[in-house]
Length: 140
Image (tube, rainbow, N blue to C red; front, side, top):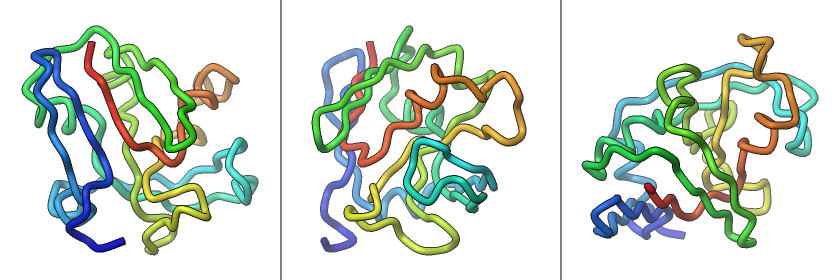
C-alpha cells in the first residue's frame, strides 16, 4: 500500500464522500493514548496508539451527525453515537507503538477509546466500538 492510496472513506450527512490516505491522516493533528485493547490480539498489554480524533474527521466532512456508522474491511460494522466524540474523544489510530499498523495486524486503522483512563469504558459496549481494519465512516 502506498502512502497516497485511500485508506478511509467518510460519507457526510450531505452524501459527499471524502477519501483520505495515510499521508493525509498523518498530516492531521495527532493524539496518543496508552491503553490495552482486550478485544485486539496482543491487547492484554498496554500499547501507545496514535491517530486522529474521530471528531476531527467529522469536522473534515463538514457534517453534524447524530450517529456514526463505521465499517471494517470484513464488513463488520458498529454505530457510535456522536455524544462519544466529546465525552471520550476516541481516535482513529494509524500507529501502534510508533509503527504503522499493517492489515495483518488489524490495521491500517483502529478506533481506540482511552479504556485504561476511564473505568466506565471497560465494558463490552465500548470494546465493540473499538473497530479494527476500519475502512469507512458514514455520518447519519
